[in-house]
Amino acid sequence: MDSLISDMSTSKSGGISCKDQNRRITWEGCSVLLDINDGDRVLFARLTAGSKIKIGNKNCSLQPLIGCPFGSSFQVEDGKEGPVLSRVLQSTKGNSLQITEESRDNRMLVDNNSAQSLTGEDIDEMRRKGASGDEIVKALIANSATFEKKTAFSQEKYLLKKQKKYAPRVLLRRPFARSICEAYYKKHAERIGFLRVDTLSLLLSLANVSAYSDVLLVDMLDGIVTGAVAERLGGTGYVCNTYCGVTPYPINIVQMFNFNDDISPRIVHSSVAELHSYENGTSPPNDQLEDASTIRSQQNEQILSPSGQNADSMEENEDGNMEIMTDVAASTKVDKGTKAGRKAPVEAIKLWKENGFSSLIIAAPNLDPWGIVKEVLPLLSYSASFAIYHQYLQPLATCMNTLQAEKLAIGLQISEPWLREYQVLPSRTHPHMQMSATGGYILSGTRISGGDQTQTM
Image 1 (tube, rainbow, N blue to C red):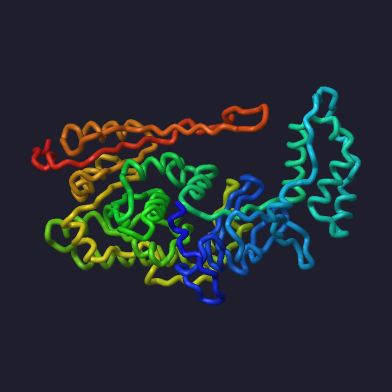
Image 2: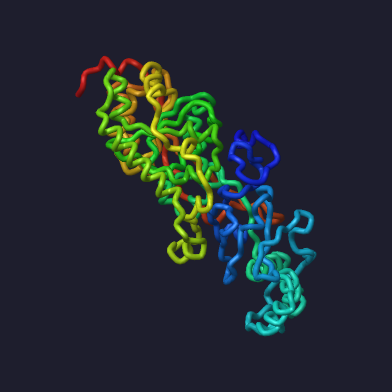
């Protein structure tokens, strides 16, 4: 994942290309993942001078985030011109309140809303005088009649609850395969076909995706698999998205990876009909190539065009807590010659015709696995690995049985990843109470040449 962080040159002002950026520090126009209050809200944004997010009832500019290292923490504070995001240094992060563990319990506490002597008017008065969020939290603790009687665990929960309300924090995260997949799976898993992060990792491993690989993809998960493969290749080899018909599948998520000019041109697309036409020694009709290129160009223009919406307008449109800012490329000039998802060059297609693809990944839950496998498996080189993801087991079992009967592959197996997260804290270590039941299934194997001589059933 960190292979993309290779260029550590210092950013320069004005017109620096993505290739010359320090990959550990944000720059104007880059995509970021904002984690608000430890996962309460997660949103993607493009850092520009005019970008804003809404935290509670406050609109904050994203300008202070430009030029800061990924992993930095920010806190909402009241500035002279309104709410601002102020960076919190690691040494001062957290509250200075010391919570000690003693033999206390909450049996004598009664929740009758009379323990807090600080009123809402008092808090508003403190805000007008310029009190910070941490000062308000300390005042609430000092004026609570029951705080000292609570257990250490209850004190920690109370402190966290008040901090989220009066001193919200924003964590600046770098968008890469793991963070993007986790963010989508947490709030809108249906958009990526319920693909869990451990399933995505196993999918890449079973397909033998490595440097200088030519990977054939059928990605109907909005581009999450395409971005993960391109990230692993690191600017070597090719990622070719294929599709049936003349309309390529959208790969909107790829725009969030901040790929540089070495990686973006390696992400291409070509239809199944085009690849088979070149394989048979003939070229597809020109009108078909033009239609596919035109459609893809229109889709890229829609993705890269400013929409004029900000984070709070998206918050009204979405039902969940995860917002995706559609102005992901607003106020940013993108080089059309290096953007991801271009038409595959003819030279590369001819090379794939001679040697075949080195890996095949299918992530198309809406299609029948065998229906697409019989179309794209002949494009794979012999002894090459393939992996097929599906949310359910039965379609993969049917496909596996057909592959065995047709003698098209060996080493066939269906894997079900298992991921269990644990809460590890003093005196309370246990599995998380809410976990996903399954991360889907993966059918993997190796293509062999024996199936080419078998008769059709």
